[in-house]
Picture 1: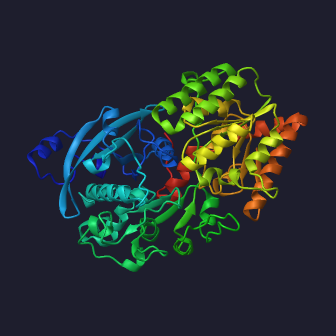
Picture 2: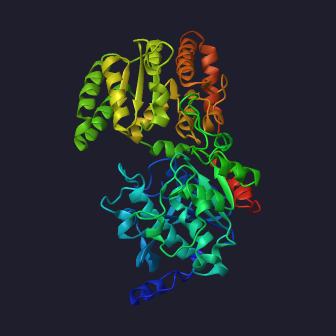
Picture 3: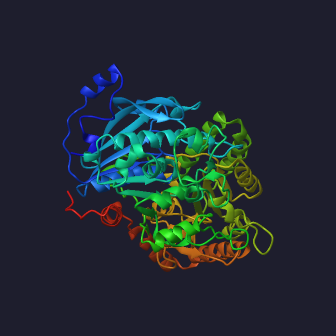
Length: 560
């Protein structure tokens, strides 16, 4: 019987807890039980921001199909337990700071696919909601990670409390995702109260090494000392290599995990080398390359490519789709208006975009370049990089596209970069920046684009290129990470590279020019690449097999 299916949870200390615990169902489970702990869970309404949410939505059903039982654990952020039918399972105590905090545990059972049932635990505490209920991550401009580090430290302590309730009923593996879940490993390593976790197989996944959750060791309200004041630890082993007076959760987790995992094989190789961003534009280990080299030499580091969901015909019929140009422009204008109404800073962007849309109603472009992306340095830095002619790569791409084509970029993010894209839209009639996010618009761009642009400076895995390829849209990608693990140059898409930032910008422009020429004059070659993109498959069932055998170290089982 597996821990999180047991009839008891952490020892109750209040009368109300006894009542709740007595109401818990007695559910017998298989031995192959995986517990996933993460900041995001895309299976829950409001539970996704980025790639972690996608993985926590799509991987569990693939594991269940191969005779695993999966429990997903995430904070509620004051809202997740209200978005679905949930049951309060328990309220239990966690030692945190100088206090004993009471954490509520809610259970949500969801059915996906062919009656596949996934159990979700959401943990609730006032610190998880903070001043912005429903917000998963906070922007701390003056003290990076300060708010998030405190709430995720409590989350990890609560998760560790649940896991250690009954050492005889441990799951087969615990899968921790990014630095937000790392406190489980910290407490396993250094807190005697959680010594029962020592023999538990703990996998640690790196989704984005650039975000490490670094905070001071002491003398700060958001510090290791403030969260766990009695903890005795090896400071040298968990200190950030660049700021030795700071604790690095990512570094600690890499050192303490049973196995360390990246979401593509190439990314696992890249992060073992040091950064060289200023000259070569190379994003490697982000200061943690020595720890990653050590993990690799110990046989603890491996990369497994994420999968992609391929909808059935019935799912396709249920999707809201945009089938014509006028409907797309209507939806785009509505989405922009909604975004501008919510944020006053977006009104100038809406004004410029709406004027562009008015002109586009009179003329549908003959070629359509597309991007669906966060607006960040990682995603569009190379697009804004100057080439050898002293103009941005974006300007060069638009020049190659010509006035009979259109490049539509959908996304939001960093304000200064949004401003650069807005300025480019004002200056170039063949560029439309939709400064918002909409699943319907995104799917329309995947469905109807001719070439998907994804020039990420680094990419642990990437999903957008898979979604575009799924709809038979070839991609132009930078030769990094999961992008070159999915796109084969000249076969199902196109890849560019370069030895420095200027050369990368040059190659991005030259590649787009050559691709657009192929689209105009070599229709047979274009059709073959388009068909190959549509045939490519990156299945979660394949990824799940690798997870079970190589990460969880379990014997493969016959699929249901």
